Image (cartoon, rainbow, N blue to C red; front, side, top):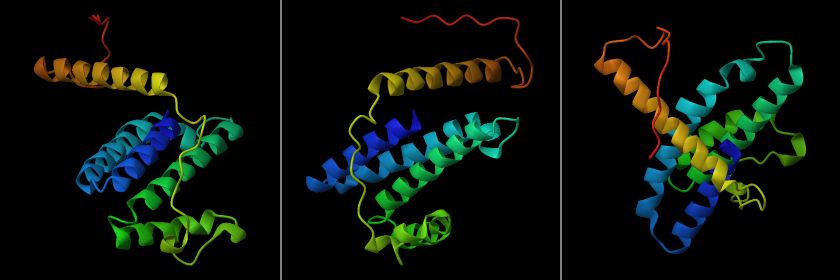
Length: 158
């Protein structure tokens, strides 16, 4: 899901930059940061940390996060050059020696990956997020803590 979303972001940013509509890009970058931090990392925190005995799953989760962070940092570079450079200098320590560049601004801008798009999955995750947010809103209105288990919840989809 997050790789597909990142690939869609690359396509969107590239399209908007070609059309000189830079004002559309920053808001979409911020939405992606929210998805990455508040949804992907939170939902996969234990996988990323390696909790459990599945080392292969941990490595896949870390590799996915690294790839997405690297791509996102490259996308941000034209808009936030200094922070992107700072993030890149930390990320490049995990890169193979032959792929490291002195600066993020010397590296190639990301291209969309064919076959990496999964719009159906992205839409499903968006619906899941809306359901979770609606559930949190109802809990808040009824003053039920997030850690309090519910006996049941009914989701009505129109």
